[in-house]
Amino acid sequence: MKLLVINGPNLNMLGIREKTIYGEQTYDDLLRLIRQVGQREGVEVECFQSNHEGAIVDKIQSAYRTVNGIVINPAAYTHTSIAILDALKAVDLPAVEVHLSDVSKREPFRQVSYAGMACEKSFVGLGFKGYEEAIVYLKQRLECKKA
Ligand code: DQA
Image 1 (cartoon, rainbow, N blue to C red):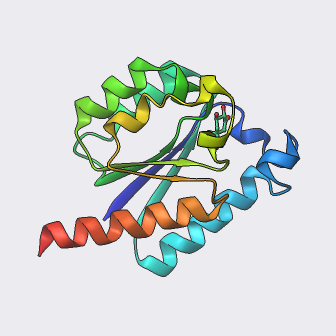
Image 2: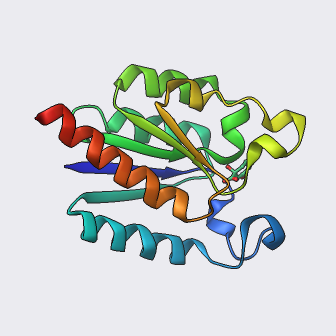
Image 3: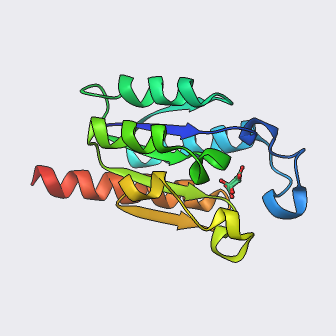
């Protein structure tokens, strides 16, 4: 089983950007945690981060027939990108949305999630733990499909 974890713009700045919202831990710390969870769960996990909308669309397209599920934190593109929504719909893979912060309690412009419309589940406001929950959820969901 292979999962693709996609992180959008500015998430490479974790540990530097708005620490009161996103915490002290860095993007490398996040990669380490995801790798550990993948190993523990026996799931192959590929991580990808980009600050560019088109690169994220390309990566989602590349998941078609090569990956079993997608975990995505599209960051600010969550609230603007119909292209990312369409790409997720196009590949039609089980997808889960993650946000470090609780977007539901933030500014009005963060209340819409386009990507979320193509995701079967969202984990918000859990910090790094949200990625762990998303991987475990997809693993269980994909194993159920097999049985
Ligand atoms: C975020 C929330 C977004 O609104 C914001 O633009 C981000 C990070 C989060 O993980 O909480 O960059 O996706």
